[in-house]
Length: 343
Image (cartoon, rainbow, N blue to C red; front, side):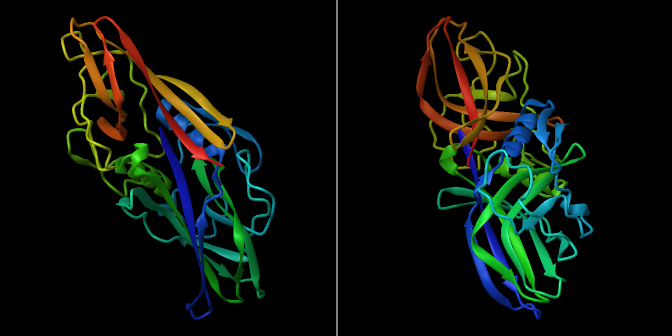
């Protein structure tokens, strides 16, 4: 199971560029829209999400297209507002977005950073943006968020109601940055965060490592297909026999079990999925796959992974060790992997 979280950093600057205040905190929530878009990318299908105007849209990819952002764009990337109201999974817009005539929406500040591991967490600054106060009066910010461009529609994927009021002085500016994160123990890999970063950026900004150990430049645009058919053991959910704990830097399972009927092999079934659902404070979807032992000897699996097939390459998105499961001859097991965010 993998759980994605986020944190924000806000820096207020004076008219001469001097830093006057810093704020930081845990993100209130990714929204249902976000998990649905990840579901679409993993299943390689379109899903129904709700755009900034409240209209349901059928979307199958996403990007913030920040590499092409000319500034003044108020419908994608980091957004700011001065509204209130509790964050809910169903939010489709900020409560009261501040317009470009008040805070000038600048282009995104550079490419995303390279993901890294720190204190047991994988982290990656996904996006950063600056806003200049051009209103002639101080401007108060109480909420922030991120909107993605999905299949041509603007979709809010994250919203935060700030715990501290952010006051942007006359002629000053504010920078808002978002870092996505996940515990290494949860199973996500650096590859997954690289794929997310490339998607939000709108280009192959950070190379990923394929299962053969080769660096590949891929423009993911929010698509991470895992929809393997029966017998396609090179992608989708994989199982293996290695016991090494997760580090986040894996690009392949430690000892993957091949598809087949010989000793030490398993029959890989077709990938299947459960749709995004809200359960309490969790927003999640899952994928699952069956594995059957048609050999005469038992086989014990100790690791599971999720591999995407993109641009002709196999990219490991998740890997985790599990309690040993022995599969007797002519028996089988179902393996489920869940993608989760917490409200």
